[in-house]
Length: 254
Image (cartoon, rainbow, N blue to C red; front, top):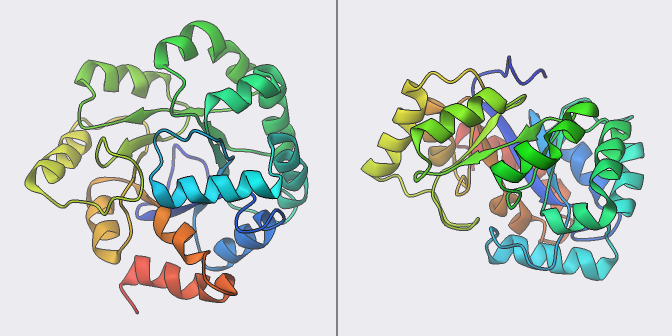
């Protein structure tokens, strides 16, 4: 999928690499692809995930205990890229990237066939002034986030910089909070839609039901499910439930 021509009502799913087991990454990715997910977000764990709620924080802690690291993840992605045809985005925090080496990270992303990266705690100013040339050198799109508090001028600036989609946080809270379908939230989504941005718009944080998915994709091109799927991975033999879970999000089936 080219992200300047994203299909309407696309669905993405986030999961944490190394959770529930160190070698879960490829089986989970395959199960999601088979279930019809349009693109994946694979999180690389960090010990202080400031934007994540308790479900994803827990998955990150377990993944780290299991031995997941960026080198291990890139090793797994070499197998994944030969079997996964849908786009794969990496999501995580800047400290592990800095320790790995930013240029080495970009090179590894390119070698692994990664479609883009989401690093919530890398400020826009630092990206533009320090790291933008490196990401562009290796053709790794950087996905920017906006919140209800983001000013219109900044949104326009992000849209101009974006080579992929814009990640629209449904609220300024952490992950795992159910989408609050308030009038303010609807007006926020409507405002973003009415701006007619050149980049595809994807809503995340709080998408845990068919109703939330339907509302989000009324105003955006796609929606991302995170904590609700990570919570499913806590079950015994969780991948047998993947297809049903995805169907429930898309179509409201139980």
